[in-house]
Amino acid sequence: MFNLDFTGKTVLVTGASRGIGDAIAKSFIELGAKVCGTATSESGAQKISEALGQNGKGLVMNALEPATIEEMYKQAEEFFGGAPDVLVNNAGITRDGLFMRMKDGDWNDVLQCDLSAHARLTQLAISKMMRRRSGRIISIASIVGETGNAGQANYAAAKAGLIGFSKALAKEAAARGITVNCVAPGFVATDMTAALKPEQLKAWTDTIPLKRAATASDIAGAVVFLASDLASYITGTVIDVNGGLYCG
Figure 1 (cartoon, rainbow, N blue to C red):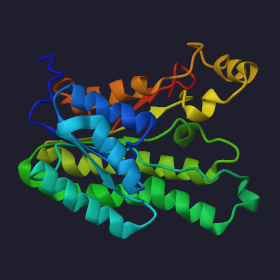
Figure 2 (spheres, rainbow, N blue to C red):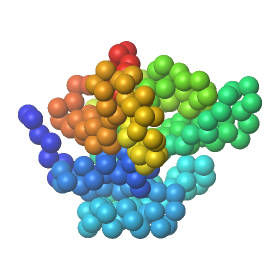
Figure 3 (cartoon, rainbow, N blue to C red):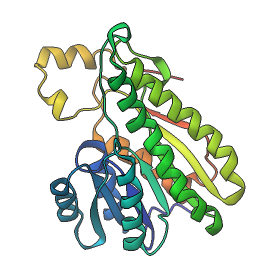
Figure 4 (cartoon, helix red, strand yellow):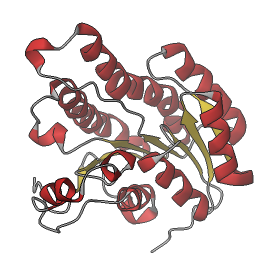
């Protein structure tokens, strides 16, 4: 019953060249899965291939270029020999700024990358998952999609949309044995936060009840759980991984 062995399973993770996506991809490799991870460049894809080893492969996908989504997915199916068992929608960008001065391009790019690209990739995968009558779709949302955040109207809209999309799709796909869920991180320690001064970092973490930022591995653990047999009866939900910063 308590099985975290993914031997024989296939997992597609977008945005896997660093941070959360990198941790997710490596976690599944360690648990025996075959994994494809995406990056926006050939060099990034090559680094993913090297990091994941013989059971992994890096592929190029630029979510701002819709044609690359379909090309990447074809390559992933060739590597897996069919549709992935688990799809993790993680790729994302930010283009922060006050909404009253936000450029159309900044709005459109974030909605395309953080929402529309995920929907398109999910649509490519889910028809075969439905025929197979099994599958896991997990999208990385954000605390911002639940609470909002000044200066991130575009990002909040995209992440809130991703949550709503996942809840609706969960209802459509449940009868075919497919679960659809989101993981919503809060403040995560990244390369960017590592550049903060100690007093700046403390000011951030002091607002978190657990008094620390999340690690990428904290987020990956929630994703692995949702992909496992342990979560077979969980669908249409959001797992908040934020140290108590938001209790929805």
